[in-house]
Image (cartoon, rainbow over all chains, first blue to last red; front, side, top):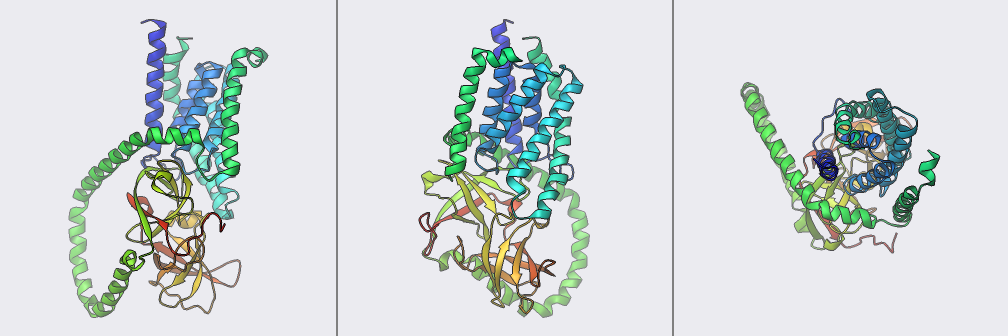
Length: 168
Length: 283
């Protein structure tokens, strides 16, 4: 298979995976454990930026953010800004500070999902007027979801390693 | 890392990302509408989201049918026991019939309010991360939907529109603390405000607050909108399930079970116009 065909195949597989994860998450279906709800698209994004180029990582984060903004109940632009910044940070950390191994992927995904759910708490819940509810969200929903999301980076790490690492 | 920051590629990417971020920020600060790029992607992806919602509905129906089969025998046994109990309740028939009549009046609310203009819509996306059961519908500004338009079902009030795109809109439900609406107890005429909270949302209820200790609200009372705020008067909200004392002040509160099950909503009606509606200019 030529490099061009590999690149196209990789792009198609990633697009389908991202689309599936976003549609699954926002179609009302969930795989919650207690109140923790994983964000599969974020785990895939982290695995993707670890093996993609810097620019591809940032652009992908931004596009995923814009798509999620069109279906999420968060305020206008929240996902666009948050996921762009997260993918930018993850790109730099993974390319210049971390090795590309599973441990790094787990740590990076935990950092990114913690950042995402903390930002979501700050923007959507911290000043919503329900003080007890806001901290309940942070500890029960946010922290749990961040840890649960991290688990999903394991299969995505191996998938992206297979798809992207050899192509680079 | 410094080579990456100095590269031409980084500058181009930074310019694109900066432009999108700036556009998003402008819409965050000024608009009630979705940002144009979000709107375009929302419009393009709408058919896929509708398809996903349909698939989800079919899957839920199959799962429900399977569960019904398993529970049928248990239910039969339970129902047999309940027949005896229900025989005893026949004495209360007259009272129940009266309550039923009241409930029917709620359902006929659309006929009572000739000034209402409705747009029907279907749910196309539900944010499973939102503990307040917010969702996205398949109608937007092209169907004359505006921010703050009330959203209802045949059973009662659901919430209001918080973001409007060209062909989709986002709905915040009455379970959210962001929503505050004037409400009145239909039997005792006690009035207060209704809003949500995380702990209440988990139970699927909202809270009827600021009720005086002397108020005569009772469990089972129907609560409807009083007409204060963005909702028209007379829309059914739900029935009172629990009455408690506020820990902060001397008032009491009541937990209201909305007539509409927010997790089961598939189709809604948006009231795009009614007498006394607060418009953008009024705000």
